[in-house]
Length: 101
Image 1 (tube, helix red, strand yellow):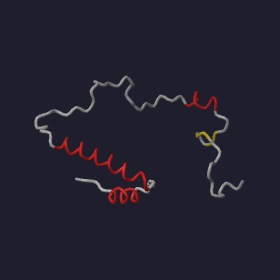
Image 2: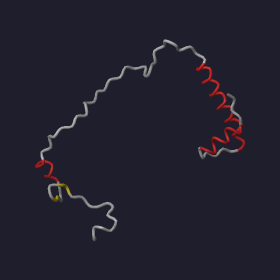
Image 3: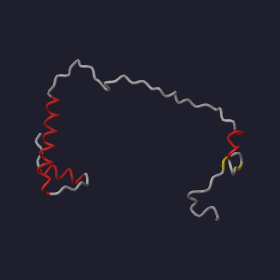
Image 4: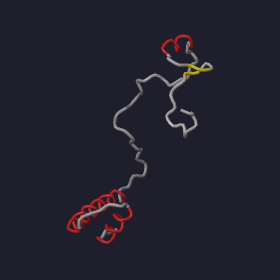
């Protein structure tokens, strides 16, 4: 599949990219080389070859994310300046004029 300058201009327009006219030729050649490399890879016989997703064995050193209900409400509310009905009251960020302030 050969890439021409018109294709590059069309895709650039769709992607809302701007290129100087003098750069289009060089960019077209680079894209064409990339496409040729990908086409070479498509010709390889990979039947029976197991996929390698990462070269390094990776295991998580972070603890599992497990929910726990271990919040001591008394401890939680020690540093709370304002509370209302058992909740922490915070200033409104967006109130659409409803706060009356």
